[in-house]
Length: 395
Image 1 (cartoon, one colour):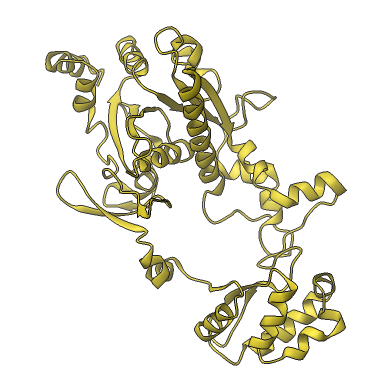
Image 2: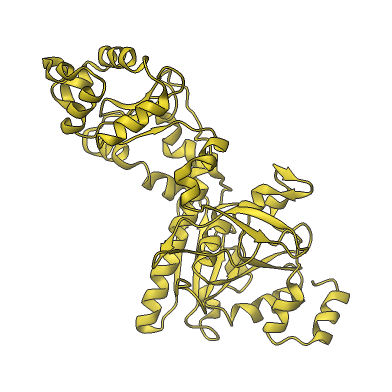
């Protein structure tokens, strides 16, 4: 059984990307995700391009496996309904600004009597304390503030944004990790927890050795383009037709690479013999490698270099990536049936459990509130109750 979170019910109050990705990952493992959206407009990402017809593909990319409930969270009836749901779930995920959930009476302290085991995950822009704790934050703001943009891009010192919302993505992953850790803890003692993370903290946490280098030595890293800042040859290299990635992580790799390139004596030259000496002569070494690589096409080099046990791969466009035989073997694209009988291709969660991939339980809820009646019925509301809420424009 690969539905490891089967039986876990999650109230998803998030919008945009980080929070929705978190709950999409929980859905991948079998959790029941109830996405509660504002009755007027819903998740803001529903209005974000790119579009397929009227459907936001941005929204679709991080809302697989969920059901959508639309209600007026500002009204008294709407908040009562939301609390009724909150006392009967295992997890609440939110990305309001700090304090908003408490104002709604949905924080862990307010729910302690009625749902003492509830786990509340809060994802904010800048964390629960500090001078910017109440400021709005989005992915690129965190990329810039963390220093990530300062080490990304070519060596001309122009800060560069990463090409995908990397901080939203990693924040969603961290949030899912925090929730699963809290679920394990609750299994031991029955207690709920309030777990928090933020875009800024997530961004700083992935600065990796660049952050540690500064903290330990005071050295401030600079952008290195498509080369590794401390290892060479490690980066993008042109061939007779297309660029490839070569990553020699050791002296053994370096010796093997020289043999594959047809110039084994290159490895024995004093200026290239060790990692430090190669780094000191990076520009000269790169020029020599490009001359050797220019005589054969990328596909041949990738095959030969990989056969020698050296990490190597092509530089794909997105269409080439999904056409790659390895990607197709992994079955990363899963067609999912939509409520109208159509089909939408989605990128599945990147997991295997007991030699099986994790199925997407249902297509993203592209129609706002499409599952409202079904979900409210599961929380004990009668058809008459639901119709009354609809008449009062609560749902």
